[in-house]
Length: 243
Length: 271
Ligand SMILES: Nc1ncnc2c1ncn2[C@@H]1O[C@H](COP(=O)(O)OP(=O)(O)OP(=O)(O)O)[C@@H](O)[C@H]1O
Ligand SMILES: [Mg+2]
Image (tube, rainbow over all chains, first blue to last red; front, side, top):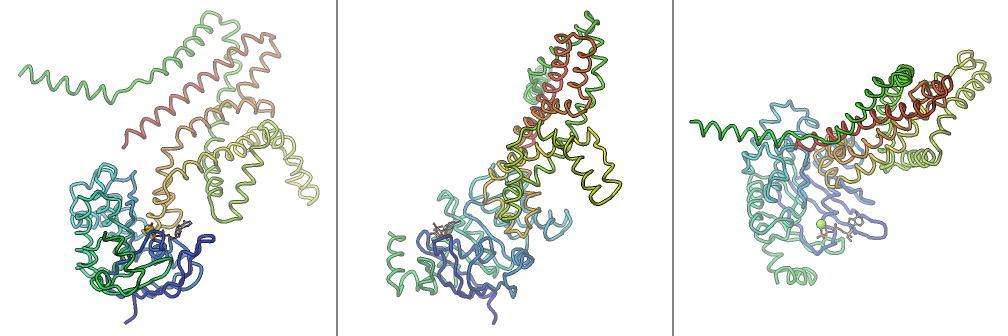
């Protein structure tokens, strides 16, 4: 079977910082992959290379059969890949519903009624249809992040990328976001999740990956990686996170 | 019954009070208008004569300012996008333009457009022996509008640049990650937010432009200032003439300032 995301030996430099040092990774349709690792290890950079928010310097990424090279390809890939950010990045000048419908009408060229219907269904799905007409800044962090997930889903992506979706949230709001992500995983969405939520990783992920200093150090099913890591660096990292 | 009526009555009243807001600076504008009226009623000679004489300049000043300003909004945005572009050619061109224009006095630029630029065109026409160019005559108002636009678009580009850069990078990234291209992201996400930020400085630019438009009087445009000079040259009453001209500019600038404040309040209330 062809992987839906094929990452081949990519390197990324920020000036003198060698942020990704030859990362290769294949992700298959329906897989949920959790990426962990210390701060600055390149987790966000890897995620952002997949939808080309970041350009990389060497190597190749193929998403759903499309090689990321030209500008048209990049927009084609971006419509297939949804992204959820740590800081939500909702559009503050648009209502919750407009946040979810805008790209549908502008990019997918759906008509307003259709976009609205999809938008309401998705708000239903993430559990806040009653907030459709308020503005994002009037919502709690957990609600905002759920809207952000709905906004990404509205494009009917084949892949969802999550960059620390719960680390900007108050503890009592983390679970409501994880629940939405869990439901998505159960439906068979392909997901790449940067998160240190071990409970979510154990329950939802097929694979967990440890990155350090721009490289993938170890990959294994989450239970194995978390309880029985083989590499010293993984052990060291886990002891810090779990303590 | 009566008390409940009272209640609902007082409720709508307080709501009205909240949404109704009177900007007291309107009074200053009215005061200036009243002074003008008093002068032309009680001292028609010379004030009514001055007003009649310069009145056709009012339209010219407003027209020149408004047309220039609309062009400034458009070309300023183009230059501002150039200034934030990662493309070195666009960025370099926009930066050179802004730096050069900001380093040359507006009056000198207006002189160039009215006196030098047509000569350049004529010489070019002679060189190419192209009749339409060699017999080129400058239209004063057109040249004034080009000159004001060329200069103010550079200033405005900096206003746009600052406004766009004040919007967090995450907004652009979220828009792009949804598959919107650069222009769609600008149009639907960045600019609507930036506009709220730049409205006050844009309003200031408008008022400054309105006042600087008086410089076009030296390049043959019959605006308020030029008409004032003409009146003075014929009648030798400098004090009255320039008081009247100043009052007329005040009406325009104070009125514009109120409109800017009104638009600012309106865009805030929409949220
Ligand atoms: N825009 C940038 N400019 C310069 N350096 C950057 C930029 N983005 C990331 N880096 C650097 O690249 C390296 C990898 O950063 P990255 O954000 O991918 O790490 P991370 O694993 O996501 O860390 P965190 O857990 O803190 O989010 C770091 O050394 C970081 O300082
Ligand atoms: Mg990160």
